Length: 512
View 1 (cartoon, helix red, strand yellow):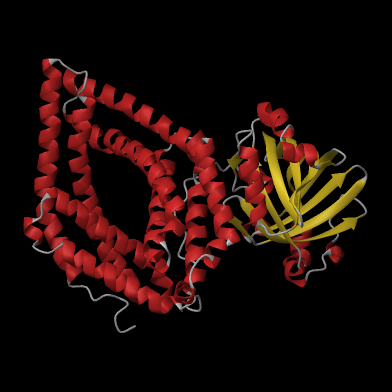
View 2: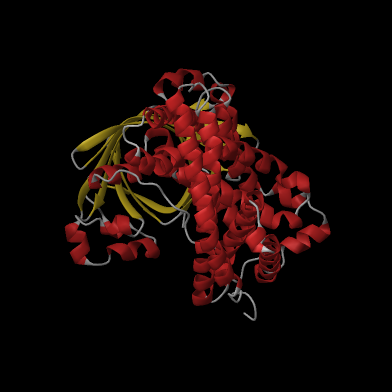
């Protein structure tokens, strides 16, 4: 079955002329512009959409083409989906023209066929160029401008598609990186159809959590590494649009979690690599994590820490001044996070990571022993990783009752790494044993996180008080620091109970 492979990028209309002046476009062969009109069919309850299938009828001039797409994946904006196309006579679906048996089965019942109606419409002008960045590689670059419509609503289209015609898929990312140096671009994880069906359902995108681990017992370490990096990039990109265009702080939180998971994947598999192989990825993840982490700290402080205190001290001028100052610092940190993600450097991280992962040339740079280690069954490696992570948590928690806040912070980090490792390798073990272990570990980690939030509060209070010199502000500082100290003191007893409960748990990977 043919597979469509294309990288989707959003571009502001004001930058299109600059993009067209890029040497790749100037050397490319310009194709005749097209006015494209497409209709996506589905049932009233969107049965096709819920199964990941799209039925599209597209008119280009007087010609109609029917396309059926199904399944597929997205890696750092690169969409790969099985598809079948056929020329048809008019704007009516022709089910006999669907030659692929796997896709044809979705339309096998008369009842479903009778319920199919137009659901989404796109109208846009396409300017296409055939680019040849190097011998043997051909990419069709299409600049699309127009509108998409669904459910009586519409929104503009302005995007660049880089579709692979020949050559390895990672070249699409490499070309995007070259174009990024000329014009701002945003990697996109949603197709026109996905955006259109969101309009049809009047469903705004929501923050996306990490999906379940993609690992299977038959994978090698290399397979597992690639699958987990791909999943981390997908989690990060799935929340990018929301971070840049929505005020919901959960988008920021999920992007920060995605970076933590990516960093944990690299740390988990680092013993199988030479340091230079992962260095560039680690450096950029740390940089982005620092910016997003600061914004997240202020989000938690403003939306979770301060509200109970402002209710109790509703008329306290110093508390009000702290709230105003904290809101300003939060806004500044949030803007910095958006700039970091939407900047050329932020998009370079996504696109370069996609190219690096798909090209796989890092594997050839390893010596024979390292390549052999990466080709081992992941089940063997998983046990080694989990044993090591578990031992580090036990070491960090030794003499628990006497741990200082910095040592509790190190314990929290160790527990988090163990939890991520447990998440990654969970599909390799008994689901019930994994669930019990992870649930208990999550309780301990959440409690350690709350304790850490109280410690972070003290730091943010000192930062927010700069410039606040009134007597009421000084009093408010004392109230906030006193609250932070009280939370730390009361949380300590609860932490000990959770620590003892978790320590008594039998690791799920033992005797598996």
